[in-house]
Length: 144
Image (cartoon, rainbow, N blue to C red; front, side, top):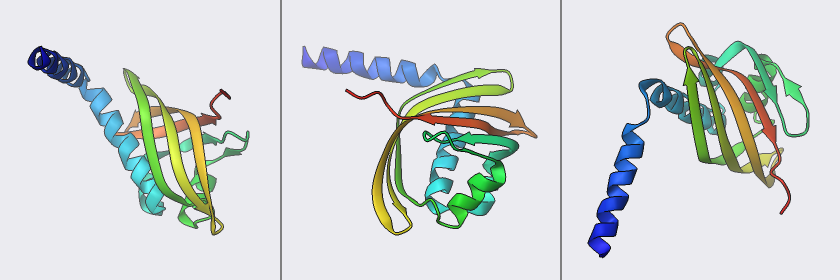
């Protein structure tokens, strides 16, 4: 019985993994590159992943441009120590993709350790052969 359950679980996982389209895989890779760049504070990588028209919305309501988003992370004003993304969904339609996920992070903004738990929506567009983030909005999860 246990072997049967294991076989079914493996089959479901492999079917789900294979069901992801080429576009979805490319977007997932871009999201992962962004996650790492936000931790590293890499100005070059952040600039490469963000579209020039980026509008970056925080859960507080603050909106940043691409330059502000990149500068905040590259200067360490906003410092992510860790970022874990879960419950991610990706929908691709032509050259546009919508990504939703939960974000849990350890921060060290201004030398002050903290934790962040958010729900994130990002919009990506394929530009010049690569996926660029054009919009991002964070919201706080509902209180239990």
